[in-house]
Image (cartoon, rainbow, N blue to C red; front, side, top):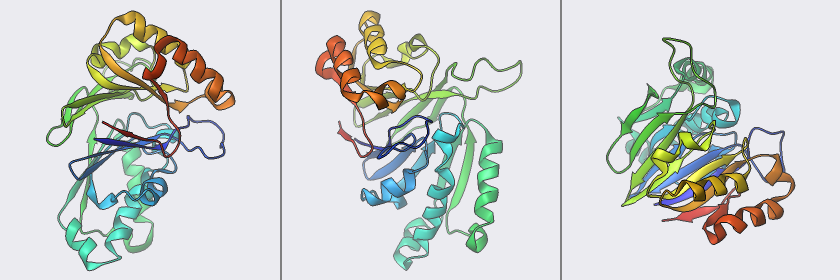
Length: 261
């Protein structure tokens, strides 16, 4: 399993060499996207990732820094099919599921695609799925969703709108936090994870490291992404504080970081 950090920044104003949140996961010749910040299509393509191997897209919540690049990614899948007969044949009849917590947002994106050239006529199909607690897919990659409190508790009868994910493949497990409320929301799902991906747009890395250590759960590395202003303004200082707690188990990601399990 290989993880590519396509965007490592939270929803700040533009920062040099950093883009909004997106991670691509490769396993057994298949490609999956977790969140789709502004630069995910451009970054993944220019890193040499084969976008035609895309098997699923998972959106944690529909804030712009997590979904702003989704139209371009979906648009480029069609564009690639126009470049060669081989690409068309590879994609013909394929169904690409898009797991998203708000189907109205997907419909808005789809309307945007219809307004582009070719009326988004494709040899493949997009299949939107509303994210809900439980297993979303199984096979080469097993993905399970569980809600968190980043967007608060929904009104009675309304669906949850913010989720975290666990992903398992090749005997490895990772937790992808998305944006979340407090760490205890994640801990039951973080146990025995080889990688715990944690956002720092709403938390300090050193505090999360301390909470992880004090929780007593068994995990491998703490990988930080979706960086907030503390890290963006003092990367080395914040990294040093986190390493005081967890040592070399701490990883701060950058755009283009590659993590292999």
